[in-house]
Length: 168
Image 1 (cartoon, rainbow, N blue to C red):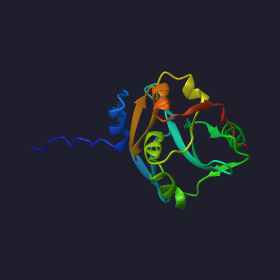
Image 2 (tube, rainbow, N blue to C red; image 1 turned 120 degrees about the horizontal axis):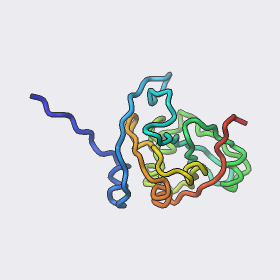
Image 3 (cartoon, rainbow, N blue to C red; image 1 turned 180 degrees about the horizontal axis):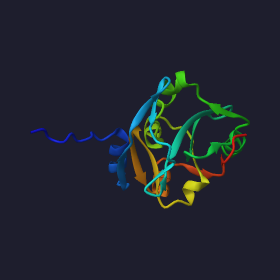
């Protein structure tokens, strides 16, 4: 008889355990999309909670920074630049992502990035108004359902209005 394989806790889960922040682990099917592995879902929410993406950017004044916003929203570069006291922000090139954040595309987590780097982190205002959100657990296909204010406090994040319905 085979025992059911138990998922190993990710660095992110271990950090949240240490900080006594409650979360619920979730798994998602993944699929290869070009050079990257991504969640295989056309849904932007699960169990009524929105899935959030973690974007790693660079600002002309601050250097690297992180933006967290719902999967179904687009990033307003202008708004995030203003909030983060930059004149301009832009995405980190995919080839530089692991070197910059420590995580591959699809596995970036604000908790993991904060544990490795002291980059400024920003959550979109939708997270400020949400009961719980779903974020990456630091491994492709593994996510966490967590209370956004507890999460923001643990990574010293600020909330701001930079998620839009249509790209700039």
